[in-house]
Image 1 (cartoon, rainbow, N blue to C red):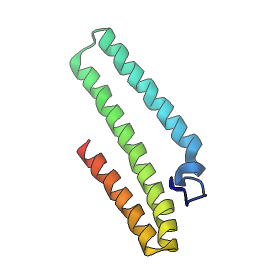
Image 2: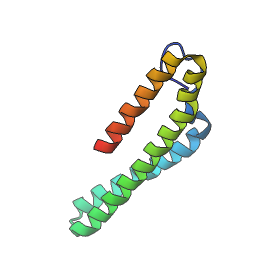
Image 3: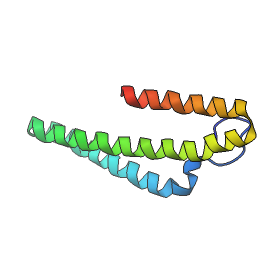
Image 4: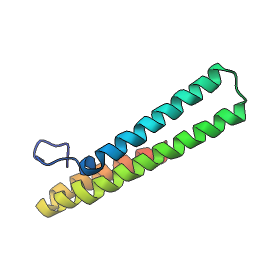
Length: 102
């Protein structure tokens, strides 16, 4: 569930990988659609509406991935040791801060 060498398990999202891939492919299609709107000189507000929908969709994926990380990687690390838990919590906090800034 974790990226580090000492973690031999699968990532927390592995059980939902198909769902994540479906969501990302849908988002990819939305992004292509927004690019096409720009190429076709569509109205600014309509493009902004699509960009807003893309942003919300990506935020949803990010939120789900963060939840999976907390439920799996952080919990597993906490079971190992306080030090491992601290590392995973720091990773999660750094990810949250990046998401907040974006």
